[in-house]
Length: 132
Image (cartoon, rainbow, N blue to C red; front, side, top):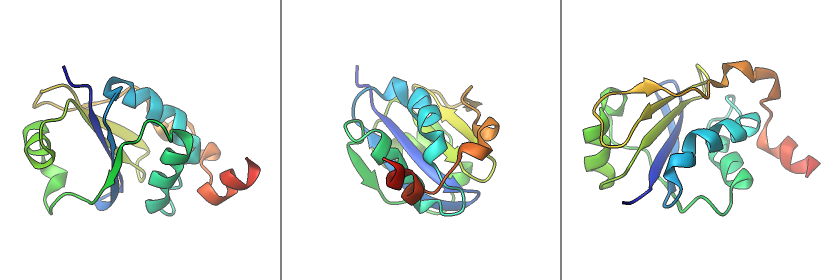
């Protein structure tokens, strides 16, 4: 069975960009939680850069935003748009939470990796890279 995942970082309804994990898609919640300190809600586009900096070997591709109306999509629409994936993770940088559309399910649920407990750890990617 394929183990892919699509992760979209966005700021409320303002979409940023998506990441494709071509392997280890089931690890997406843990990867997002681990990358949380490096996501900058003030500039959602940098969240993708921060994620790639944390997990350079995990990210297969960076993709453009989905068409208008994606906010109301269920898993079927994500699967049809992207082309058969195992899971979708929407990282809302405004509310600092993750919504997961799990393996071939039309329901959604909030993943346990709630980012709201980490606001003081969120830093701009440039600052994080400068300390490396």
